[in-house]
Length: 191
Image (cartoon, rainbow, N blue to C red):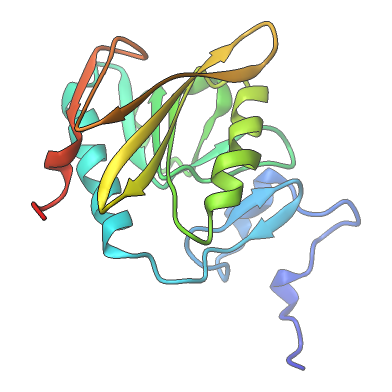
């Protein structure tokens, strides 16, 4: 059995902290922190997933009002033990060239594009954690016959949980977190 590299050993008994991610240059790209544990995305991303992230990021960025940043694969600091990496983050925060994360209070919308290896985390763990952190909007994008289907959630503030407010196929129109219209079928090449 191969030895565990020193950098993979937590620096304290209670595990890793959110700030530790910025001091792990050896960690693979797309390393997340969930409940004090490092989570690595080790499988190659599929073309569908990558194209969906890039096309939707571009669409949202083109519609975002001034003062709202749209970033792919940027971590969000939910608390000291959780710093997940949504596929897309929409945040009310100024552009900072050296930024490595957004605070949960800055995030207007977290978007996850479901992959086979991330399905459980995206559908349950992240859905719960983003809501508990007070992130107002969550979109979960699933693949249905190679086309995107967006499950739209909004935060019910008193319960700190998400409620489903719609499922979009073909076209997505939302008045929040800012007015947005997305031709979902146009995000990918024609079948």
